[in-house]
Image (tube, rainbow, N blue to C red; front, side, top):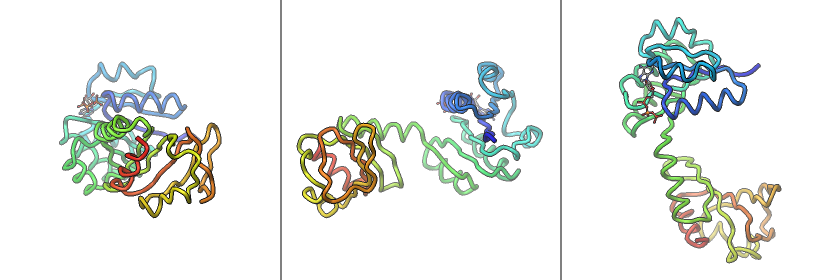
Length: 218
Ligand code: ATP
């Protein structure tokens, strides 16, 4: 059976989640306090409802508890975002993802039991910065404040070397966990595997170590 989702707040972020979930054939209830927003999604979401999510009785009436995952995408109104999350938690929703506006907002959300907190603008800003610094950095995923996974395109300087030649683990303290080569993905590459120009290296490690390595492949 398909999972069922609720998205509260139909701004650009919440709206794009609704569209994507609907495209993937998921059941999604879209909620916003403004009718205009809700009308925009009436033909996209399974249900589109005008409601103030800070009203606990409304959340109960909508049966939020029975959904697999609720995404709180209320942006500017931090108080409404916190209150909604708190009530969803109290009602007993199993999985709550909330968009945070800043670090303080995130701290509070985590304290009250949000299962996942996302900062789309901050995270996208970081990704783009990495991509601008080095055209060879294709993607960037933050694992913690200090650790990330990045996709780096191997340049001519790396090509023809084996992982042992490069001695990346000892020199940089990072690990190449996979290599994408065309449609092929080499998981856990061997020390003797030769890197080819254009290979995409999936690298994991501390940000400072990855940065040093990124400079080598600029
Ligand atoms: P974007 O995703 O476009 O960047 P944003 O971060 O600026 O959005 P807002 O526009 O502040 O976020 O809020 C997103 C949506 O949440 C708005 O459409 C707003 O009407 C809705 N919203 C705000 N408070 C509530 C509430 N209490 N109940 C339901 N929806 C709400």
